Length: 138
Image 1 (cartoon, rainbow, N blue to C red):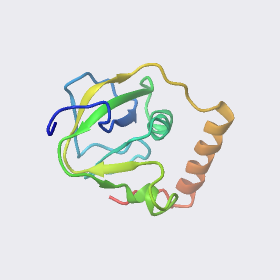
Image 2 (cartoon, rainbow, N blue to C red):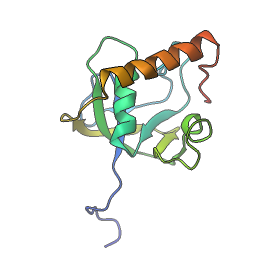
Image 3 (tube, rainbow, N blue to C red):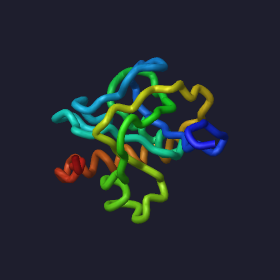
Image 4 (cartoon, rainbow, N blue to C red):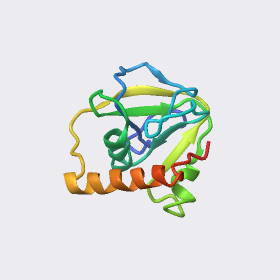
């Protein structure tokens, strides 16, 4: 059964405000969804829908919050911004890659976090920015 898809295949998600469609590529060299600044040399994604929901809810910009099912096209590694700083052992299943992510489809039926929880997260990010600690390990 080698090489065939199965119901046990891992799904990966990318939360953003970008308007993408199946077949599009999410590539390195784009600014972060969360901070203003230099383009990133990695693309970030997760194997949990909750992590992708945070990505969509916290993404900068005016576009609609979106979550895409994505497929890595090359090697992946744990995202050190989450695994080393906040959640040792990677329980959020957050990853990054230098190779593009291929958009497979969009998750359209998802529920965001409670408004007060979202505001707490935004306040925390604003505090990090004010302290100059909103650094992405890229």
